[in-house]
Every structure is written in C-alpha cells, then in structure tokens.
Length: 166
Image (cartoon, rainbow, N blue to C red):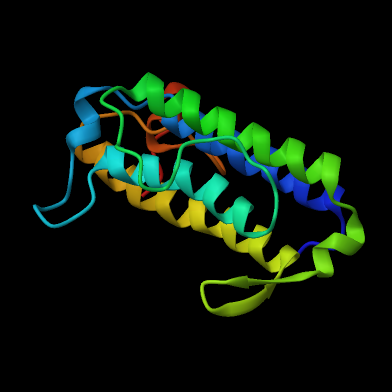
C-alpha cells in the first residue's frame, strides 16, 4: 500500500516500464493467440490492461487520457503499445499533478465497494502484473521471446552464456 505519491510514482514507473517492455515484443500476428476459443486473446489481454488505466483512474476522479473500456482491440501491436504508453504516462502525470499524500486516503465507490485511492492504485498495479503473467504464457506459445522483467528470462540466461534455470 502506498503512503506517499512519490512511493506510488516510483512503483508505477517500474511496473509500467515492465509492461511497456513486454508489450514491445508483441507482433501483429501474435495478438490473435489464445489458449482456447473461449479465452481472451493476447491482444485482448494487452488491450484490457491498457483500457483499465483510464477506466479505474476516472473512477477516482482523475482525468486520464486513453482508450475507453468498450473500445475495440486494435489490429496492430504498435497501436496497443502507443495507447498503453499514453494511458500509463497520463496516469502518472494526473496523480503527480493533482493529488497529494492526503488524497491517497480519500475514499471512492469502486465496483460497489468503498476503496481508498491508495487501494485503487495498488489494485491497478497488481491488476496489470496479473495480466502480464497471463500474457507471457500466450507469448511463449506464439513463439515470442519473453524479456526479463524481474530478472533474466530463460533466453537471457542463454545470452549471458549460462544454462537456463529449471
């Protein structure tokens, strides 16, 4: 949980940076990849992460630029990358420019529950981590090389001249 705006912004820079790094590996062809016919596609997961930023930020009263939650999934990875970067950067700017540490304690109705703003920010960060993990499975199935986010990936161990960890 966050105790200061700066604490959130530092975490958001790291986590949104990791998401940007992961999204940069997506290809147009990979966006259609899904685990089964009823599961979300890789593109849908990436778009869901993207659209949730202005959607959740808006529920806190922030003005966050980005696509609407009901907008169609783009056909290209670059469109998703661009929209994610805009939304992620806009959230950081809105929080940094309009909130102070006391604002984190304010409460809002979020999905029928009462959440403090600091809870909403924490959920938003964990939400994208959760969906990034789902994405890495589909990305591997699509033959994409996963970048290391919290340490070297299997492929990066090999690049370092070391055997991949089991």
